[in-house]
Length: 216
Image (cartoon, rainbow, N blue to C red; front, top):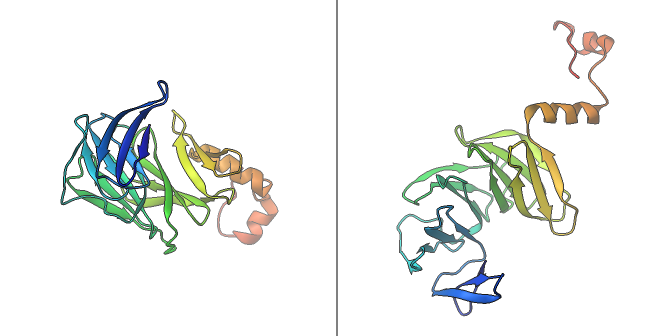
């Protein structure tokens, strides 16, 4: 566990032993991310710490100081940095190159409060402060479908299931929310909410030039 220290720095805390195991002076930030190989730590203020020797390393390429959330992919290939202005910047895992920026099509500027990579590292889930979660395809840097509404009390954390077909959303007060992200599950959910697909008569009324097919 990592905790902020005053007047600036980080404390590494072992909850099993109930004691501080290491301290590093200098880095600041309300969010931190450790690369899965345990060799790099990044803070939301743009500080980079080499682990395990706890050495701060100034880098010309870093997420900057306007970051709200940070997350490494499971393989350490990517670092996502959610900004207070609503953008999410994608970096390579060594912070050598900025790979792209994910910007909402609706021009929303609500902060990106939580991030989660799918187990295969191809999809990024982003929670925004205006109570939606958007999935992003990292190969194309494009959103996957429309945003999912959340419970409305602010999202603190996101996590995919181990098979990547379900997203868990942890809010401040609301019970844990589960979102089915697999296409088949999403279609089933939509059909259930709509009360089923179009009847044949309605299909011919609204889509007269398209051959009928069952949609649910």
